[in-house]
Length: 291
Image (cartoon, rainbow, N blue to C red; front, side, top):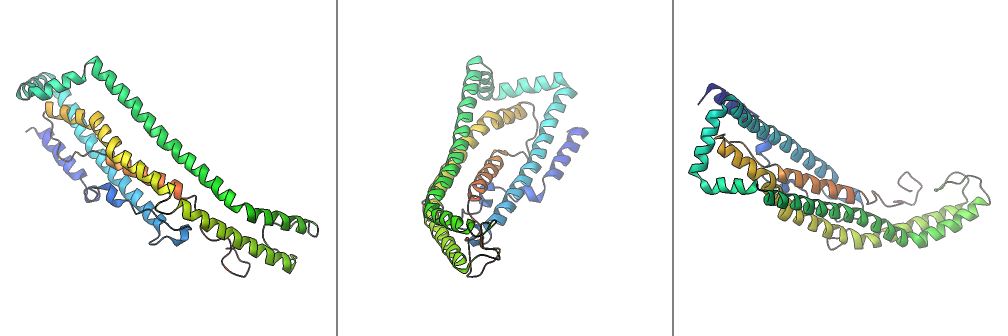
């Protein structure tokens, strides 16, 4: 083994940090989806756990990408150092494993390249559909919540009309000068809003609700379709190339599952941010928690 290759092997080993090795399965880092109506009710602070998991998975992905890039650079360096010797090694490798060589030749044909392009288009369409569905769900949730709030909003409009006759600037919550009867009516409206929100929550944020169902289908797609697709499209040809170039793949690892788990958590984060943090009014008094 040459001095250069020894140094490269040592460098790759040094890059393999305990942090990346600790996350063999990024999906195990994903916290369970919450079912609470309000974000402040989540057990074990789901948002904080999610943010920490995203950061850990991203860090492991970046570290692994550095390792893979080092191995890739080694293969490029091998070609540049002695192209003739490398060509001989590739020829010998093809003779040693004709099936693998035939597979690579087939991948280079026009028909195979067209199939790859078609697969890329189809995969992009699926990604677009899932993204569009998440936006549609967000709009549907907002519309459903608005419908649930309509009775309370109607009461507020009546109260606002009464207040406008005695006050020029009364705001959206009690201020000095509000009549006691108006303050009591406002509290009742807030309680009605809370009740409507919780009733709507039972449909949308429960385990059997549309948000959980969507995220379950999205995860299945990522695990069963996108990850295997990207491994076939990118990882397998690269590994075959390393084999033909007689480049050690020690330390190499796919990053497709890191990418997928990160995308899943970010999509879940976006959807669960639609929840209210607190009830509209949590006490009989007027406080900052009363909106």
